[in-house]
Picture 1: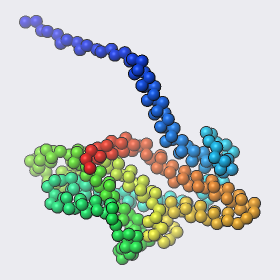
Picture 2 (picture 1 turned 180 degrees about the vertical axis):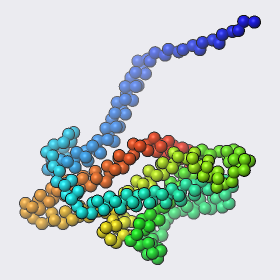
Picture 3 (picture 1 turned 90 degrees about the vertical axis):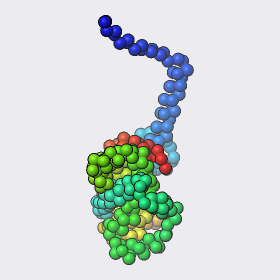
Picture 4 (picture 1 turned 135 degrees about the vertical axis):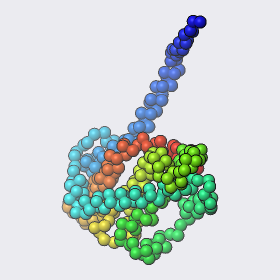
Length: 304
């Protein structure tokens, strides 16, 4: 009996219509405009940080460097506390990322388990803190009573768990780890701890990268807690150091005369310099975790 050959699937040659081409052109134009709207403010800040403040204060549209002026960067990098501020912020960010991941990932996994006793009341208590808290003075008194005032833990422990991040992680585990996977592992003799460390965590690299970015960004930009809970200047994070840099120059510019006018000119540029100095490290790191960020947020947002 002769074998019949599998029919070759037909290839559809769809020619774009004039309406399709117009639609594509409009989409491209809209995307270009959106990119310009998003990117130009960042580009403007970088240009303003190396441009004479007299030009910047005119409010003109900057497209390329005009009247280069680098005294702001010279002042910033000659500030004695800048390097220590960078070191402190890097250390606080690293420590907070480790502590936060160790708290958030196991907590979110536990809350994603429907067999957890008291799951709903516990989740309610977490959610309640998103809308109500004790306030600044009780937090300060708690930090003092714990004996961690003026230490790195005063910044790390209050920020160890973000309820929003916890909810995102919980939703990720609920939508990514099916109940059948847990049951199959239990049939093979896998207990809860082994399932979490050998199955759940390896399958959660995406959400871990997202949480790492969230927590690292929040700690990198920490400012108010450092003013409340830190006392020594050599322990201050970068954001506080940059704020002190601007304040010290503003005081010098408060007098009158040509020297004061030059100081005011420097202060005007320093505002853009400190934004650039503080944001560039994050802008360098972000492209390496961007793919995990987009995927993790979408997966974590499937369920609320």
